[in-house]
Picture 1 (cartoon, rainbow, N blue to C red):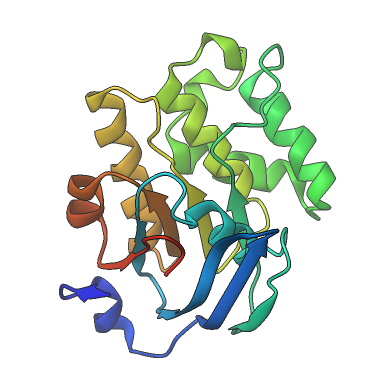
Picture 2: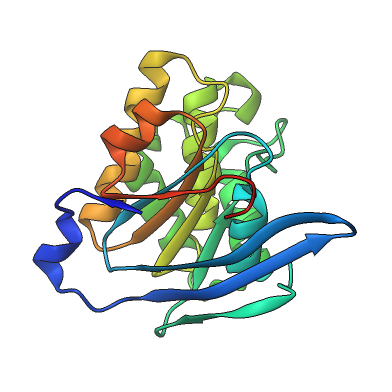
Amino acid sequence: MSDKPPRARRRGAASVLEVDRLSKSYGSRTALREVSFAARPGELLAVLGPNGAGKTTLLEILAEITRPDAGEVSRSDGEVGWVPQEAGLYRRLTVEENLRLFARIEGVPDVDAIIERMLEQTGLAERRGDPIASLSGGNQQRINIAIGLLGDPSVLLLDEPSAGLDPSQRIRLWQFVSSLAEGGTTVIYSTHQIEEASHYGDRLVVLADGE
């Protein structure tokens, strides 16, 4: 793990999530081998590695989608939001209809309020009535991330969030994600792009062959 002075240090060094010697295998293939790290409040933590390094497996374990073979994950109070690489949006529904549907699935108590908050946070209030299919890839990803934020998580997990975006869409996406971290949300994201991890990550967790 390499360090550069993170914004999180200005908010204190207490960890919101700790990973202790996580291991996971699929048959004879080892996906993770005794991986350990901690994440702080409001930190952008990049999980960097080539395809097949174990990045997605790690995030799925943190999201409690996959169970590890060994090791532990502990976190302070608060939800964990999960945003997979493939957006699960309904393309024929509007922006607002997608948010409303997923808010109800999440059991959000005040659906109308959270929809307004997400539209404001993503900067897409003027597109609320537009079908998802009419949005650019970058704006679709904003809505995808907004769905991961519906439960007001303290930790947000993003799997290759900028994959398939052009350079200008990528910049706007990272401005949005950085604003989440500035607001106190811990963001852990995977990427195989060294430049992206170095520029947008407060710290880097480098994975190679599951280690």
